[in-house]
Image (cartoon, rainbow, N blue to C red):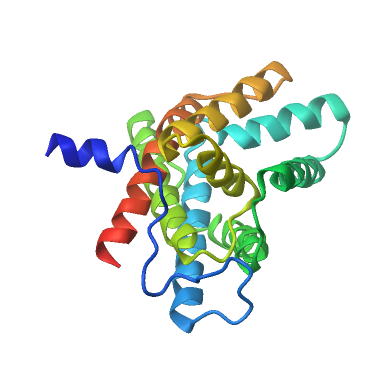
Length: 220
């Protein structure tokens, strides 16, 4: 049991399943590949919305966007776009390839955030808020598992994670945790707002993504 847990949280390779695309630049993927990609992005978007609605701290990257927004005077939307562009520039030396999943990542998650926000719970009880944050982290991890296994191109930040993992050989858990902590520390330094939900997300998302990859690889 302990060995299995260690294996889950020290994954160093994205599972390649029968429905996974053989190439990130595949423009004619299987129907099942697209379906699981959309399911993954939908779960990811719901998880992100639940985190925001819990109202005890946003994600580390959002803290970074806030900080840059405060010192630059640009809107959150513009700073989010600028950070995404900068992250994509880092893809070049790391030889990370985009795909239709990279584009769908931005489109579908944004749509899910907008449409689900009015309907998802926003508890005021701290215990329910903490439970919602933990559930959100799990959903984002499982959603990441589906869309990364689809292998149609990750989002900007996940692509940075997978590229760094390939270059360093470190586990997804460690790489993702280091990226999230770096984002929240820099964002906080620039004036971004940090809450307990932010800390839980930064520490827990790496484990959650590894679990999501294992879960999808094992059962789908």
